[in-house]
Amino acid sequence: MTVSAELAEIHHWWARRSDLTNPTRHEPVSRIAGSPDDQITPTGIDNPYWEIVRQLPSVSDARQGICPDGFARELPVGHHLLTKRYSWAIPSPGDIAWLTHILGRRGLVEIGAGSGYWAWQAQQAGIDVIAYEPIDPSANTYTDGTEYLAIARAGHTAARHHPDRALLLCWPSHNDPWATSTLLAYTGDLLIYIGEHQSGHCADNGFFQLLHRGWTRIDSSTHHITWRHTHSTMTAYHRTT
Image (cartoon, rainbow, N blue to C red; front, side):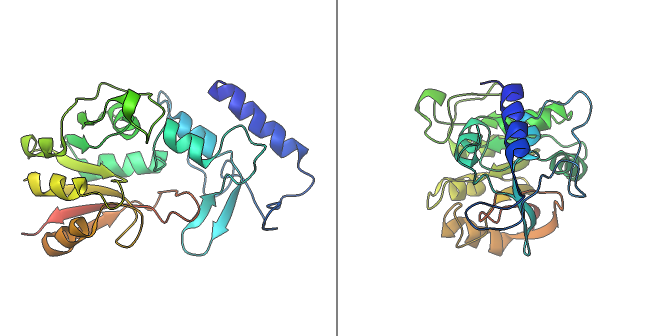
């Protein structure tokens, strides 16, 4: 099914709803599209993930604002399908604009890029980006095999070759040391981390210990939209030691 067909099915789902509540939890739901939380994709940018997410049923979370839920089984797309097709974190237009501002003229290197969707969004915004993913797409269980730009096959220590670039880590695997290895290999001074914090579902304790000891938070994207119950953030850190 094409993205346009999926969007049409989502619109049909809304048209069939007799009320605007979650049929399981009986909570009010709404679309991000057309709401005060909406973000418009700039002309010339292709971001199908966001265009789908902004049309999905979403709920208001006291901690994180509006969150797409994707609970409706009759919808053509939901959380699990979209995270495998695109990325575990949702790149909103505001996130990419924030990233462009944080980087200035600096390039970006993403390690563990998965499908390369975030790198593709950065590239469309004019950012000079290099993406690495050690696992072949045919064997990567975190994606559906799609890649959105050219991705280099190299291990996580490839970060050592790019001290002049900012390092992007997006949802590193839970309880896996590769994010720790990447941060140890990287000798630059700017980290962009997207995911949950310690005790969440990203990286291992070693990564967060390194972050606590040697890095200082400088800013976070206020435009980051996260799936319900995931508590994802997008944060920039500067090396202090």
